[in-house]
Image (tube, rainbow, N blue to C red):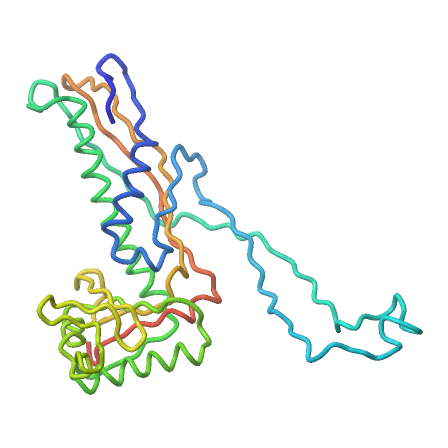
Length: 295
């Protein structure tokens, strides 16, 4: 952020703001693991609708039953007309355009007569604070996205030792039966988090990773447990579970700049961008949510 800009009508901070967003996202976004641990950010974007394109293939892997050793397959009368590997499956990838789905903006003013701070230091401070605010916005949007695309919801009537144990047994069974590969993560409300930490099965005798003194637990029934504020969930929801890295969150920065103002002796600090989330349809089955019955 350093650099004199008092003599410039407009100064761009897109690259710096992009780096700030990505750094803050890694530290403060509760659902970052769902989106692969990071925010995909582009600066100076000009495309209004499409964020990026991905190549996907919905053709399943075909596994043959056995190698064919027939003397007339691949040899003899079958030369140039057959193969001992079985039928050949052609692999074709399709291009999928991923659109932006929401926008963000900020507009602040820094007057040299009233700011009471170093001008460039103020730009740096406000950039950091705006990055934090936008990451919170990304996180809220990310939680809503997970809720909306979850393949199914598991209900519990109340948070008790028995219901919590049954819930995570059911969740474990679900991921085993879907043959999901990867790290299983559960993002849970504080009430459910405390019930897990205090659960009778999280004892040192069973080599549990729970620490009641620190109110901390890393794993429970095969899931990494992450405590998340209530405000990150939708009404009546207690938890989201997923395989890590099944989605993508992204933003395109149209502009981040300071521009000399005609209305006061200083600059307007402005920013605008577009953002969105994406998950392959096939990955949605690995996303589940937990709701409280009757809410």
